[in-house]
Each structure stands twice: as C-alpha cells, then as structure tokens.
Length: 358
Image (cartoon, rainbow, N blue to C red):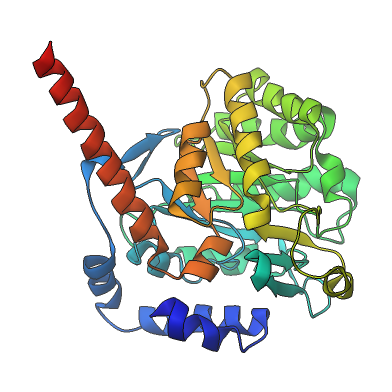
C-alpha cells in the first residue's frame, strides 16, 4: 500500500513539505489517547533474538531511526511505537536556527537516494528538552548534537559541552556530529586534535555524574582510510564509547540521475542506495581496527533487508535507517526484524541438527 499509493502521493509534494506532513501526521496521531499503545501492539515485533544490550543500554531490537528525521524530538514516541528499537533526535544545536536557504532537500528516485543541505535546522536545545519531557517508558532516545552555524569553529567545544550538560538527564546516549557536510567548516573538525578538544570536556563532565551516558562519534564516509583509522584510534585511546558510521557523502559517483539534474540541485550530502557500499566498508574497517571491542552504529544506504544484514555482518551492533524508510515506508523495520528472527531460528535449527549428528 505504501509503495503503490502513499509514496506516489507524498512524492508529488516537495521533499521538505512531505517531511513536514509526515511529522505533523505523527504528532497528530500521538495526541490521540492510547494511539501509541495501539500502534505498538499492531506494529512492534518482540522476540528475544532481537533484543540487544549495547554500551549499557537495552534495545528491544537493533534497528533505529537515524538523526535528521526527528530533528526537534517531536515524534520519537511514535517512531518507537511503529517498531523502531531506538530513535536518534537532532541534530540539536544550543540555539534554534533556520538552516540553509530553501530548496534544500531533494529526492533522486532513479537512484533511491536523497540529497540534503538542511544545515542543522532545528528549534534549539530548550525546545528539545521540553519535548523530551514527554518520553514514554521504554523508549530509547539518543541525542545527535552539533554546533550553531554562527559559532566560530574554534569555539565549537563550548557548544557541544553546553548541549551535553543540558540534555544529559533526558537521553540515553549522545552522538557528537562533526561530519555533516552541510554546515560550514564542521567537517574540518574530523581530526584527532579537534575531536579530542571537543570530547575531553564531555568526558570530564560525565565523570562527575551519578548516571553514565555513552558518547559516540559520527564520522563521514568521505574520510580516507587513514583518517577512518585515526577516528577509530581516538575511540580506542579515550573514553569514547563507540562510532556511528556514516554520515552523508558529498560524492556523486555512479548516479543514474542525469548530470544536468545533479548540477541543478547543487551541493549537499547524499544518502540512500549509492552510499551503501562505502558505509559498510567503513563499518568493517572500524570493526577490524578496534578488533570488535567497541560498538558501532551502522548507518548509510540501508535500503533493503539485505543491507541491514550486511551492516550487522560487517560488525555493526545497531543499524539506523533514514532514506530506507522514506522509500520503503514505516513497515520497513518489521521486514528487517522478521528476517533477523528467521535467520536466528534457522541458525538454531542447524546447530541442533549438528549436535544430534554428533
């Protein structure tokens, strides 16, 4: 029904207006008493094989919503009720900001991809905190945090610390976003020195708290292998809890969409199917470099059930979707979870048969 009816109707609207419509509809549904409970009963698949405990947090399943869909922490309860194991809200900045000029969000249907140059548009930290007060029991929420566009690059650590301190009691984990290509100079922070300068104050604040909040670093797929290794080494050498791999890419290699159309769209980060191969490569490289001792959230180009399994096989502990949900609809998470359960049951049956044969 989604691909045949709903998606064609949504794709008649501009990408950003369609996004607003979806968020608005979910907010409206969430206002109806008992609606989240009912959605959860209908949509959520529960099975012991799906449950995970990663960086000390318990997840009902390993499939989550990536940052960018729920920028202002408005509908994380509804996404959870639809069956997602966790929701990463944001990117949140200390002060609200409008982001880049429109149009800034574009679909590439031929490539099953999206290009965005949103620019960390959000209502700011205080608005997110107000919304996070409404969290339902059992809903796992992460906060993706970034600097304000007007904050000088040398003052970026203060923005990240302000967000970390104020959001600390409201979320389950944090993702430090230094890899978004849509905010000027942010990606220049992806080096050992700059990342360490951002992370150290967060570690220091956390040491004084009674509750532990995991901190992860989100990295770009456009890093060369040596730089991916550097970011992994930061994780190994500091109290960083994990890596999120990857953000969107500035590459336009291998697209089916015409070069003229791509040129007309202009710059921005690309997500979706063209990113799949590189995102899995980065996950595998990080996993190998850290010898599987640290959690990785795999994100980027998870468009099919097989893509999700490839992420997990490459070493991801958890997987996030964004474009995959836009193109496949809200039932995408059910499809992935059903296959993971089927694979678990098949593996268990094989093991039982082998034991009997012995």
